[in-house]
Amino acid sequence: MTLAETVLGAAFAGLIAYALFGGADFGGGIWDLLAGGTERGHAVRDRIERSIGPVWEANHVWLIFVLVVLWTGFSRGFAAAVTTLYIPLTLAAFGIIARGTAFAYRKSVDALGMRRFFGAAFALSSLLTPFFLGAVVGGVASGRVPPTIGAGDVVSSWVNPTSLLGGALAVLVCAYLAAVFLCGDARRDGEHDLAGAFRRRALATAVVTGAVGLIGIAVLRTDAPRLFEGLTGHGLPVVLVSVAAGLTALGLLLARRYIAARIASALAVTAILAGWAVAQYPYLLLPSLTVEQAAAGSATLLALLIALSAGAVILIPSLVYLYTLFQKGLH
Image 1 (tube, rainbow, N blue to C red):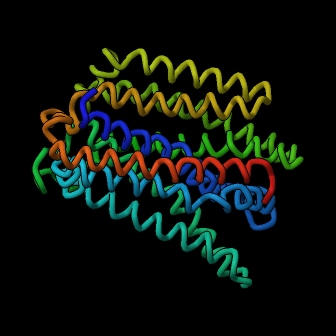
Image 2 (spheres, rainbow, N blue to C red; image 1 turned 180 degrees about the vertical axis):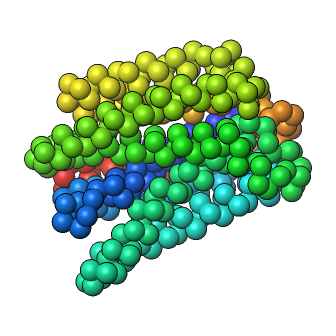
């Protein structure tokens, strides 16, 4: 593995962490949106708030980490992507800001009308932000980002079948992860009715996600043939791992083994992202910019890798302790 691939692998690990932890947070907001009226949805919203409240800000560390590594280590590809896809990226940034602001203010206001306003802002931002991020992934994966600053079409680069598929799958995966995670949280606190309700949501979302994924095969074949060839070629084993992990998670949910279902679900999502990376390798931007061509000089990459290694010694144990602390119900 080259130095460039090692640094990009670190960024990809951060992307996976954001997809799992940040995705579950976004999914909590989606279920908040679908919880129902003020009275009927109170128990669901309260459970969501107690689950994501202690960690929701920490999860965005991973997004910042990914952006900084790409900006520093692969500036050519990063500049091309952000100048082509600046519309969905800006909308996603606004969504993250609006979501965080609304989540904080909803708890600090007393007027019912304002609580509803901030609640709606939180929920809608939780739905739209992963859609825009998924659309960005779709634009990159379908080869619609030329390796030159500002050279891509700022509309068709993210308003296209693959990007719409990516956005839809991102929303569904976030909702699924949140439902699976909330099952375990609810049961841990003795809320068995809520655990059952989130279990039904998780099962239903898994079925819908699988159906959209099957439809997506046809979409990729016609709209992103290079990606399709990679997924059905050297990326196929990883795709099969994702399918197997997803089916295992379904079985575990049916058996009400929620902690094991979390692990299987996380593996399924990780394999989906890994399949995309394997299918696209060795290109950072399809169809012409490779990882090595996009990488900064070896001195920059080495300094970045040293900084990442030193930071990981502090960051990773701290986050592990944070997640472990609140999963033990000490909040």
